Length: 323
Image (cartoon, rainbow, N blue to C red; front, side):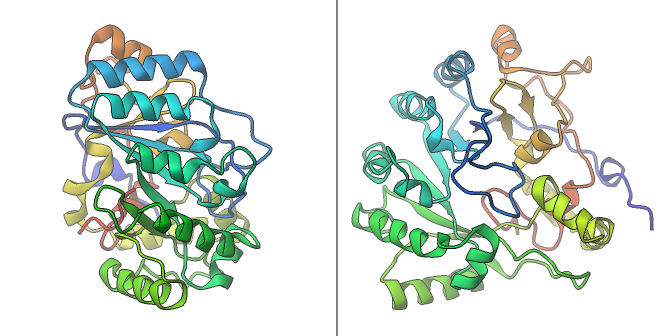
């Protein structure tokens, strides 16, 4: 079976940019088997002070940016993490941190819950399953217990209880062992299960659950290739394409920036080195956008076969189901 080029299904156009998603690098205290960034403790790639200053200039100059979304790796590890948070909050931008939770127990990071609460940072935390075995299989032994402890600490700081301190969790499905693929569960129903289990067993509160499919890039792609499941998985995603997800795709109103300052339409394109370009086909950088004084120079979104992941079933995005 030949997989149809996604751009021939439906070309995607950029809308006005409202979200600046910054990938601060590949350093992380975990090595998760599904990680599309392929982050880990041995990785050294990270955002430089020079690029950080360019990003702060973007945050200050462009009022159209409503949200600054910090991801990685573990974004909190990077030295430029706090300057970005403080710069964005100073000018009233919403700030999201995509956290693995366990970073709070690493040396020099125990003050993170207090820091995040002080700056009213929204935390979107990876928590692949409320069952311990499933989480540890995906993320490493002991991660589940430390994640539970971290959530309890965040609750004590007001997260999940104070309306100004938003705590959301992310579900990722387990990696497939054969070609009996399934779509991600209904987000609302799974959220109810998470909330019931975590409240009953650990007295943990959180705001929302986001279901995010395993997009076939990075370690997920390599895993699928090693299991001879990569092409079958792409075919499965393509066969479940849902046109009603397209208007809500996250790539339409965001820019994704890597630690070098290169610009992409999304974090998945970033990992596949699919650069965003202007109308002349030139790769864009944050420095070029500053020189142009225009964040809306991208007209057409670059797509590839992994885009079927975001458009399968009820859709998938950095904030969960699309419909």
